[in-house]
Image 1: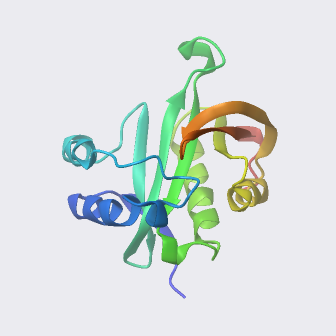
Image 2: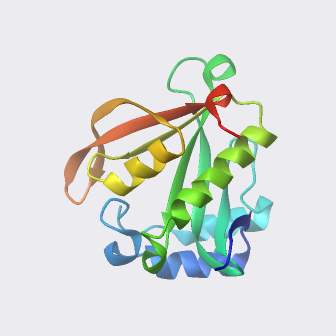
Length: 174
């Protein structure tokens, strides 16, 4: 079987993301937030290939085939940015590749990448309370469930609870 890897996004990848994530069937019920403007992604890929000091995204590949996208962005919810900044990660895997452990491997690679290349101490992730697959994934990767963020996300015409997980640099099993 081909190996999961991460690489920088290129313009052709945006077409794949648009085709695969611009519907509830493609994005999945827990990730469908309506249609979104892909011109911003195209501009960002042209500008800096989605690799910035505050955020970024990488293509998730199975062999040479793009199967999704892994993102990270700066969060400063816990205090001043210069003393409390951490990464938050997110992932989207194309529907036909879900349920095979590929997203878990991609997030493991992303965590390794972020801790290897940036001096941040904390990576966090939030997921819909009903997204049991992502909860299992994060726990498998060593993330600790910290709690419930009540009615924090508007999706499908209603407010939804989110669960927050974190992994500290010194908890990473390498």
